[in-house]
Image 1: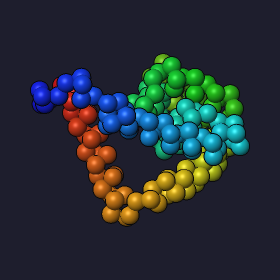
Image 2: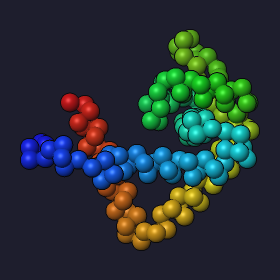
Image 3: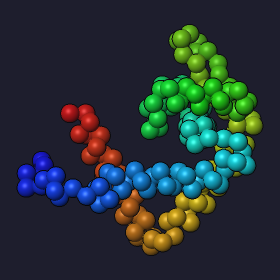
Length: 155
């Protein structure tokens, strides 16, 4: 339930939690991209899609869209780029001829492993300003917020 005492005069964008989360997420994405984009010629959307495909081998574009904060068009473009670069293999599903199953190629899997290592190192570096307890609290709080937003979205 919303606090009825709040008004637009109380709103300060820089202190608005959803805005802060988006800014933080975008800043982290840009930092990570600097670590791999030029060296491996892969964009942020392509990396996200490749990561999902490597973790859920044999998935389809619809599942990738559901697992990432990306729309269908962005996923489709990323899949096309990954296929063109030889990092993802597209195969027609036997169960549903309209659906394409996506799997990483050997080169795509190797690229995923290299970038995942870089990403984990960057995550560790970013989180190093927090104690172990604070890191666990952050993960717990993020999970709670995601659960709440999901429940509100279902209503």
